[in-house]
Length: 117
Image 1 (cartoon, rainbow, N blue to C red):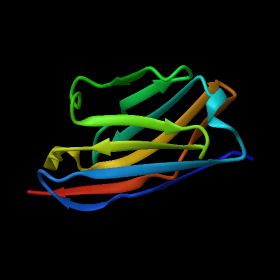
Image 2: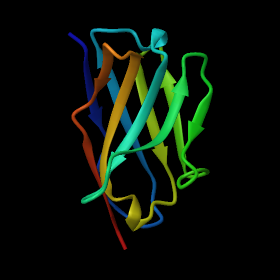
Image 3: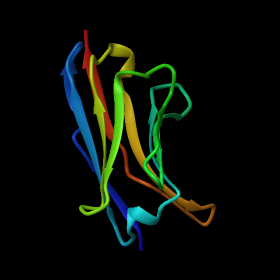
Image 4: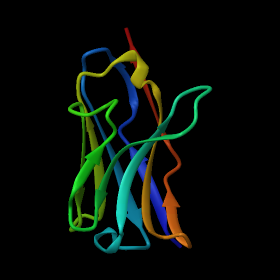
């Protein structure tokens, strides 16, 4: 059974930084087609904020480009999201995701990030 365990969320002042981490248990992320981070703000749909392909190519949403950095450590079997210059509109529940196929698509439980102005 594959499980993703997130950590690192919390309350941060605007302008600050935060690093979210996600540990995968039961599978090796080096073989995942894509690892990604999503977020869901209250009353809004879940949105993709950053992703990384199996060969390490990162991508981020235009709305967060330059502030969000995704990384993965295949030796530690973890992935991270560095968030800089936090804004109140970044307040959301953040989810990590590892994708191998439609049948093997796994999500973390979510971690709350709250940015105060």
